[in-house]
Amino acid sequence: MDRMDGDRVDEGQRATGRRAVLGAAVLGAGGAVLGLPGAARAAGAGKAGPGGRGLKSLPVPTIIGHRGASGYRPEHTFGSYELALDLGADIVEAGDLVPTRDGHLVCRHEPEIGGTTDVASHPEFAGRRTTKVLDGVSTTGWFTEDFTLAELKTLRAVERIPANRPHNTLYDGRFEIPTFEEVLKWQDEQTRKRGRQVWIYPETKHPTYFRKLGLGLEERVAKLLRKHGKDGRNAPVILQSFEPTSIQRLNRLVDNPLVVLLSSANSRPYDFVDSGDPRTVADLVTPKGLREIAGYAQGIGPTLDLVIPKKADGTLAEPSTLVADAHKVGLILHPYTMRNENPFLPAEYRKGGAPDAYGDAFAAFATYFATGIDGVFTDNADTGLLARADFLAR
Image (cartoon, rainbow, N blue to C red; front, side, top):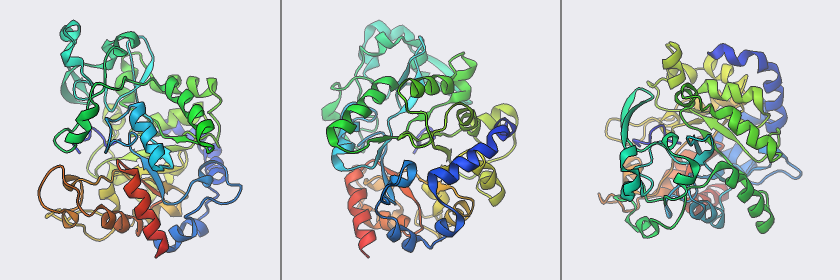
């Protein structure tokens, strides 16, 4: 999540009818339900309905542990994932999926792993450091596709943003890189251990880039989901991607709930750039664009700025119509990413200027919940759950 975290539309048409019916079945959400005002809708859906299945079984607003509990542990590690569950997250984003040289899927925020592992301290891998063009951006470092899984398993995770989370560096070197198959087995183990269904929310990262390398992601994801019996419409696995064509491809391979991620309004999904599609995210969030997405997906994952834009001074402006427009066509919204630290909050919710200090995250959560969003990705699931309880008690 967070498109780099600087923080053929026609391919999906054949499955439009099937996915539209699936969306209605999974969400049980016609316009009469999803069109409720934000506060009323959230208050009415704060608890999962009796006997609900699939997405319908999740509390609203749903609290999604972004890369686990990455506010407290290095992201995309089992330490982070399990802590997110301990804190009460409804879903764990496990994980951002990138391939190894020998075709395994592993969980890393990006294929470049210099900032999230201790690879730089491994002299045996010094020669692997290189510069590549990743979605049009020149990027220097170490890339998962240049390592076998066995080699990656010799590395350990480190905190990605130590300036904001110096306390997380305590856990540098403790956790290895998980594979997606390990995550699927872990999901079952945690479900048995905790006596409740554990949900995960993996993302295909840079699918166009990897397909050109002969390392297509979607088929690998689908194969593993089928192997573990998690490729159905009510499976506790939501799939997401910033590239609409990746979601369209997944739509043809599996019946899982699908979500299109949306970055800033003026950005273009890289598959659009690659194919010459001139549309931007601004085009995708129009009523026409949202209707098209609803033909092959069940939801969108917009950046929070698409829900409530910011003014030039960093404070929040008036909410956009995105929530209402998406709900009208039956799409859920799981925007990203709420974090407790000052630099990640709207300006009016910051307290002081320290980059690792917490601002008034509770007030920020409440403001976003009031728009009627169906859930939110957060690095701090415990804060999100308390904020939800406050909001639903109003």
